Image (cartoon, rainbow, N blue to C red; front, side, top):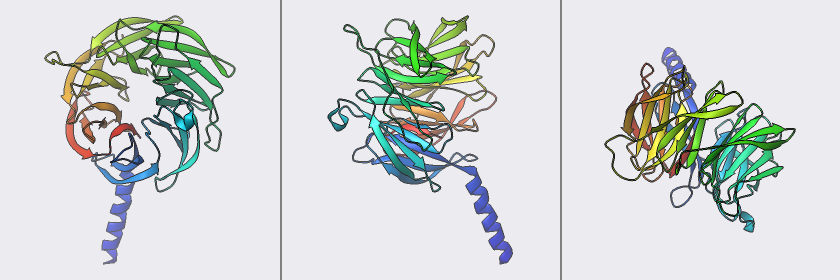
Length: 353
């Protein structure tokens, strides 16, 4: 009997070691109250033990602090505290996976849809407001009011800032409304515009990935359902490819959404809302160019966001309108996806490992 207890105990410890947390950002309403937590098994790909991590309004994008002790969530609303703005909240991560509220500040623009962090700052993209607010993050996790607000709006051009990424002392911004990727350079605590890289006409840049060495940038375009590839030449980037994300046989309306490189950067993945598919590209690691090798149905509707498991073996898709998370196995040798199963979820729009 004692031996049986030992076996059960060791088996339980082994299963716990295989499980890692997955946080799910949502649009709140009748079926959702905020940010949800799941255990994800890195061997089987199974999602279990769903629970509400914290109540908060429309946490449509989530990001960890660099030390992973804190999580930050945008509140995608248009009029937080009658300020014609959204908000961003800071939470500490507890041992049981619950999130403990720290503080909330204005995002300085309506409907924030993305947040990015480095060791010192957080950058929030405000879609309707067309602004990017830069905030200091304190050691205790609290987020400070913005110390810089970048406004991409002009009298004749409406901005829709959609995502940002820090790399070294630079900040890149995808502006769907202005149809460019902006490149800012940091001087002391302020970011100054270095260059705007225009996308092909009527593209609508939404999200992007930067290769680890900073040489290549891959931009997924919402309106044109394409990926634009930029390569660094000297101090600037040049466009070297523009490739469609949809299957050649698809007829209808579709919009590009999210984009991620594989861990080894040999493959690039993108989501298509409308075709309701994942596209897989094989990446030439020497030239940076892409070759489309797969379009696979997501078994859901409106794949807004997706993520790869940290071990690179699974890909999970948040299907907003069908309210489910689809789990795929990644073939390590080919990068192609195989559908495993679907898990119902409350209006999922962001997945965070």
